[in-house]
Length: 218
Image 1 (cartoon, rainbow, N blue to C red):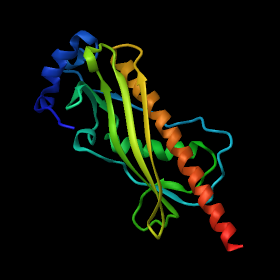
Image 2: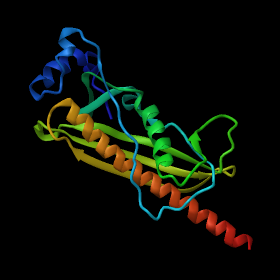
Image 3: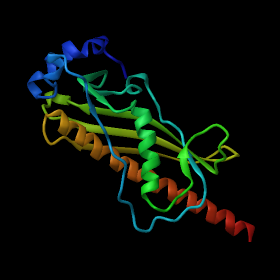
């Protein structure tokens, strides 16, 4: 994915480009502070999720440079990545997703030992993720964007560092309008779907592996 050199001038060039869609705030022109948008963890899960006692640590997702900042990404062409003017997430995108992953696991109410990867912290399993797409898409001259979230996950058994399984999680959501608040809401919808699927996938694999280990020991 190539980042356009003009992204550095998002406050000027992109602001003018998106003015007609309502996605560029007047605050950018008036010199007011950048608007911050927050996202939310998944809250509703399958009722039959297993209860886990194992410790799982969550690494910060890997991401290409264009998705590693706190800026809100958009694309009008598969080879170009740009940003909304005067609009940021409340954290870098990888840091925000790591926090929301931890909170999503906690929201299941069926796992206690979950947290960020910390040096010296013993874990039974480690969840490694890679953020591959996280942008608003304005393809084919669309005025209202489709949000795309695509992540890859690998579940690693510790301390052997054996990859038990890997999975791809891709979700989209159409914004309700061209207003930035609705674009952010669509990001929220798509991301929560990805988080929910990733959490359920992880917990079912951990439960299955531990049941198999228990059976073999008998």
